[in-house]
Amino acid sequence: MLRMIRRRLGRERTADVIVVGAGLAGLVAARELAARGVDVRVLIPWQSNHVTADWLARGYFGECLRNGIRIFGFQHAMIHAKTATIDGIWSTVGTANLDRLSLTGNYEINIELLDEEFAADMEHVFSIDLSNAFDLTPERWESRSWLSWASEQILRPLRPLL
Image 1 (cartoon, helix red, strand yellow):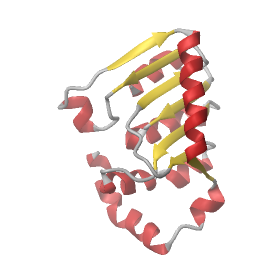
Image 2 (cartoon, rainbow, N blue to C red):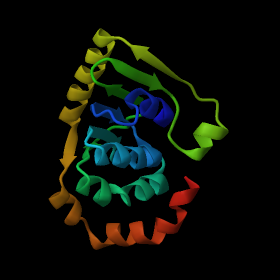
Image 3 (cartoon, rainbow, N blue to C red):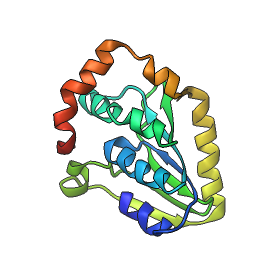
Image 4 (cartoon, rainbow, N blue to C red):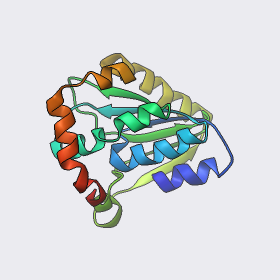
């Protein structure tokens, strides 16, 4: 999915990007896009069945927030979608996680669509999903518990493995 998003945006272009279920690699890509001035909004499950991966991804949140990425934490339910829309025209939907295992060893698939109506539907679903999410503001992130901070630091060496 990351390759598709980069190809769609090109090198010089800026656009609105909405990503659902970004994962660790998705957050890294989002930082690159935000640094170019792209409006990036990411909806991630606040709790999932991959606790270690959750903590590894959270290690990037501070930098993402400082770079202008809006992160929304989906609450009280699992979100398994891997979707993105760009400019209200291009969309991708699929099963591919943005991690080494999914991209190299698992049987995963995503589709790309160039359709304004479909992209509008995707953005509408995103807005509905936001009603079950909180906006992770920089202030909220900085006020996290010392245990959360310590967990991020302990797991930091494992980030390249995902």
